[in-house]
Length: 149
Image (cartoon, rainbow, N blue to C red; front, side, top):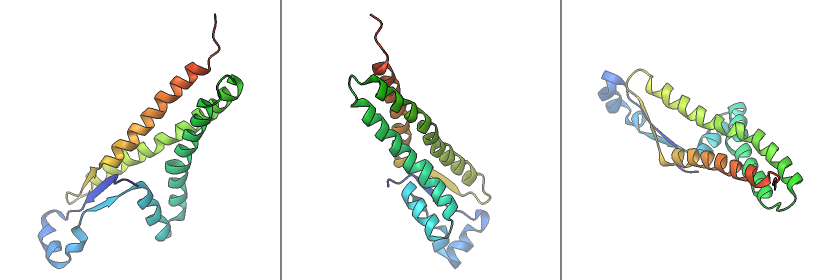
């Protein structure tokens, strides 16, 4: 829901003309992950909307839920290790969103006319959450290892 990416369009040497004829076309637009998903569904791009929902919402939330459950398992190490295996499998997909965001920034910056993409604070929060879940998974792995004493 946080602002993730702002695209600032430009028309190169003709920017002044576009600003004069239709200034709305050059207004910066800020997107959030959920905002992009809603926009995709409303414009008929259902396939991309579903892919984004899966990799940006469902997999990360599912992974966090599995970590939460595994952290509460206590002495039931068998159940926790099984949940952690599923969380590790789901964890691979949460990095797909970080890759997609980086790809969008690169593509927009290479468009002719000088358009730019500015990463907003929501992107940093998202990356921090991905890195945090990696650290949590390492901690849970250690907690669920059998003690050799």
